[in-house]
Amino acid sequence: MDLKEVKGSEVEEMKTCSDCHTTRTPLWRSGPAGPKSLCNACGIKYNKKRRQLLGLDKGRSVSKKKRKISGEKIVEKIKDSH
Figure 1 (spheres, one colour):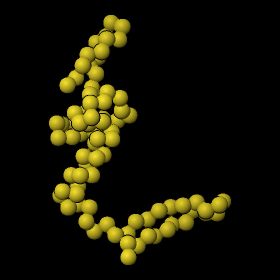
Figure 2 (tube, one colour):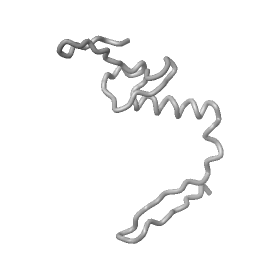
Figure 3 (tube, helix red, strand yellow):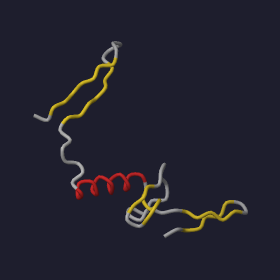
Figure 4 (tube, helix red, strand yellow):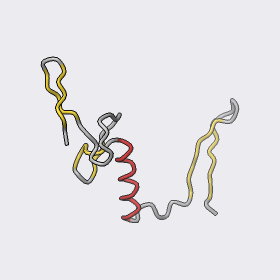
């Protein structure tokens, strides 16, 4: 549901998230209701759940993190899931 907001002589549509109904977000994301229908937080949750349902998250056993250790150069730290 899009509400109308009046700014001066302009009429601007005010977007609302189709899940949590917020009107303020740094980024609008695509969801089940179409493009730019979810706020940033709900869009991330939706995409994460969708990936899990499709089985696209399986096989991620190694993750890499870059850390800066007290003024030294950046070191890659590899974390195994063992």
